[in-house]
Image (cartoon, rainbow, N blue to C red; front, side):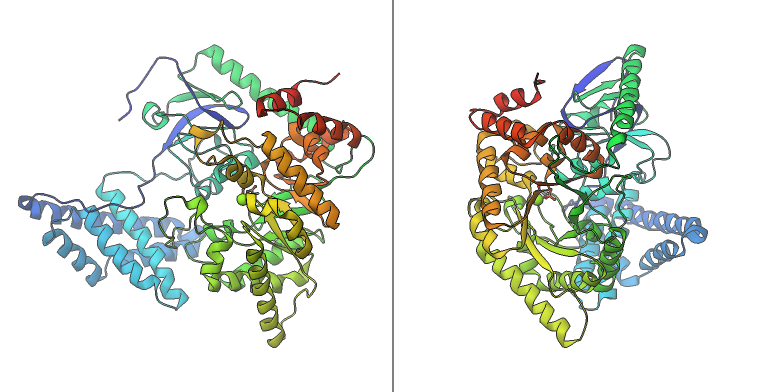
Length: 576
Ligand code: PEP
Ligand code: MG
């Protein structure tokens, strides 16, 4: 338990999303994923059984309360709580848990883990979607019981109720996606790299964030007053008036900078010499907010967020409706739908993924889709059906070789054939492309360019794989170098290969939205950049200040340098 502290203390970490904030701390400690087998002394049987029964009663009361609370606001939600309450009336479930406590001497939370997970596992295998969905509900009820048994109160990131700075060991992308953006003023995590998906979301929401702050969860307690200078990676616990004043002044400057950049909102990506650079936005939900920015295309639609918002796999109909909605909102602008990219740091609570030593090198993205054709085909069907509502493009993540491209395209062809048989309309000329985010694919970009309609460089993953530095691990963030000489060479050769083939290529990783790297990327050959809408104005401003010739000179100069430090120093030194 953290001690109340009254002395100013400074903790440091890695800047993830710039900005400042002053607010109270909200310490978020979600339950551990799984509780192992924990046994108790045989003499405590009655005590443990009583505790379990009390837990069940408390859970029922909590669920009844929740159902009542939501009755008026949201009938569907209310029904879910009632269904969860009903599960606690299930005699088999309860008596099996009692048995595990009584006969196996398992601690009640451990017995709940065992029995509820077993039941959920059985339900999960059933073909019927409705029954399978009950598996996720069982997990939910399981977590509630375990939380109550352990005496922890429920905390929700989606409703902190007042302005707060979130402190967490780590945040899952689904946690970050569900944050209450009005009240969350900052994020501090012990884990998570600068290019984790949570970090990307924090930046796109413009929430100041710092990662790699070791010991934050123990040193900071709920309600503690904090001043955060995320640009410097600094968190001040119990700040002085002077610290608070400084942070508030930074918040003011940030607002001013944003309002200055706002003059670029309605403009497009035009360089100083009139060259047009196509600018896209990256989106992660089916109702996206372009923040009033003009843009040319949706360069990356991260569809996995659709899968993460729910307790079950989205159905074909649900996906179709979501994709159509995006296409309609894009009003005819091309939308690049990236097929499911689950694995790595993105998991689905309702889907058992294989336990892997290195999930970023494992069954991720397209590899997962190939191992679960049912999931892949459902998504392709929904996307193809939606394609008649706009300019949809399909993009495959994590391709590692030509086999992956051939195989993904074969799935598309097969799905089209099936739709033809069913006489379902879709765009027969739909373009298909790949993400270039593995070293293998960038090295053979010329081969890929022959068979795809377009590509987009996923510089977040490409950097992690080229530099062999986990994008999630703050300990190796200095090795994670997106501007290393190796990356510059690779980027130039990929742009060159696509230019030679006359096929379009964009960058949709985080580099694309960093206005300090705009000139470099253009100089290396980029003509299309896609980023979070919150970065557009900055990039448009950077483009307006340079010509192609200047950008090429700058890139040529950087390409002779030996270290990333040298390159960054040159890029960030103001030029006369
Ligand atoms: C990337 O890797 O650069 C990318 C855009 O994909 P994601 O960040 O979703 O892995
Ligand atoms: Mg990627």
